[in-house]
Image (cartoon, rainbow over all chains, first blue to last red; front, side):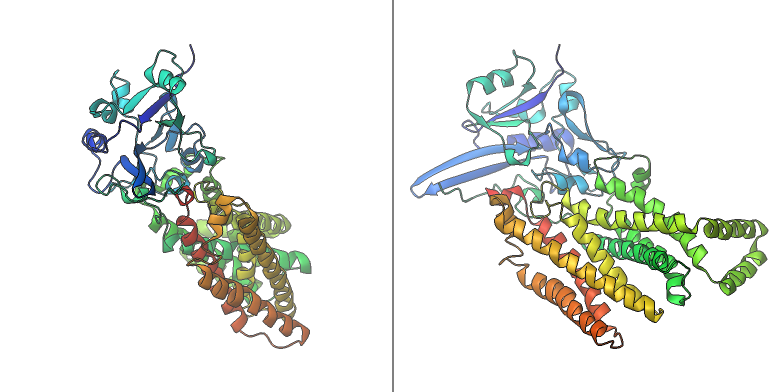
Length: 180
Length: 326
């Protein structure tokens, strides 16, 4: 059996920017005030009245080629189960090299000193649950699963729908996909 | 298709997600500047002796390795201030990450301490050795033994120490540039030129700093000549960087906007290029050609240029990201 490769799929046609994913994440992971591990981007283009919009729930892309892990001098940033990129708080010096290296600006310095970011709620996934943002989404915008499992929803969605990733030119090979 | 943002949801993001954010502040400017300066001091101190084939008799050069140690300690102090999780600083030395320039830097800095210290011990004149020996002997017999051993070892391995300082110093100079140059996400820094650019700038600021001390005439002339070469190299690398911005792809063009018409244009061209490089190069050319006495104006201008180069590139680089390409 092939190794797991966790990914998230965001259906931009379903998202209504309700911010439930942000609040669920903050509650689940005790994210301090003024910070968030995921966020919403509303991109609007065109000329009035011919406008189009895209709502995106964004977070760490848990890249396959990890600029943050490569930049980390202590090994605090590392690749864990299913390709999930995590930060070991007890190894982090708060040098911020990973923050400078992240093309998605997905990291921040926690008031406690260490660098923090989305973990795909690996603690929940390991219990067989879905990440907090996915489980709370009222419009079924977010999907999480193993891309190496042909029966998973994320696998099927990426084979049946048109999708994109953010800033593919970085070469980071992100694992958050946006259906559009 | 026009893809201008009209809104970024303000209640659901942390400030990092926005277009620009500052990761590193003045502490890293100080660290990069002093790191480059110390790299220059070690390389040039070693190179002057290797060139002459004998130990320098000038007092300024004798103390240079110890001054380098004091300056690098100051730089590391600034780096420490920048850490958000200060009690975890020891973690730098519990791992070596080959892909991380910061990890290389941490270990290079650790090699620099004994290398520069032993170079300094070997550089001390006979009367200073006697003075130090006398003082230490009063304090501790064991320390006196260690001191004797270090004098002996430093004298015996003088040539090895000179080459070690030269190589480690060059490594430190290149590292300060590569630290920024390998950050893929910051499109303005994303260039291998930053390594040699920061090394040449380090050599130039190192030479300028040394010229503020009392040295032999011959050593001063050699340093000015090397400084002119370093400045010429720095101008060449800056030209390469700008050419890659102008002639590069869309990302490169956006990355270069800050220095070529954007908000960093005026400080970069006045403080770094004109005052820090072109004017000192002209002054040094006149001083050498006309055999004029050297003034402190040229070294001071070079040092101002060195700080400005790092401050401007650090700030402009942190403001650049792939979000600029949307």
